[in-house]
Image (cartoon, rainbow, N blue to C red; front, side, top):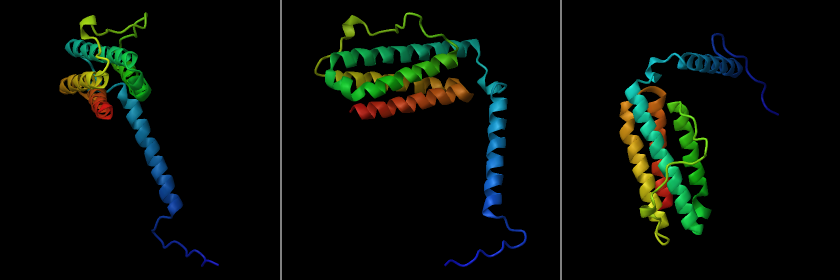
Length: 168
């Protein structure tokens, strides 16, 4: 048998009281963060920033097209990198939402020119270079923004660097 619980000394918090206080604090914090997000001046976009953000959408569109081209050129890559391609499409959707750009109605994205055909034997290295270049472009654009858009670009850049590492 275990010993009966000793009464809580006066002025001390019980575990239940601490858990309730933590839950209430978390709820208040979440409400404060979500209510003020729409009014945050750091998330306001100037016309120049809108143009730069549109350029980042184009970078990501090219990357999505590069993934499609590389996966079509290499069945082995298609099996191993399909998840990474899906992640790059999700990142594109997030960028479009941040830029308030609708997705193209045709479903097409800016592609790679015919002169940049994917080499059959070097599809992985070709794609890895494209992923790294997109990560660099997003990282260079990040300081031009503040708030959520800067965080989004930084997050996408970091995610793409991880993808480039997984491709090696």
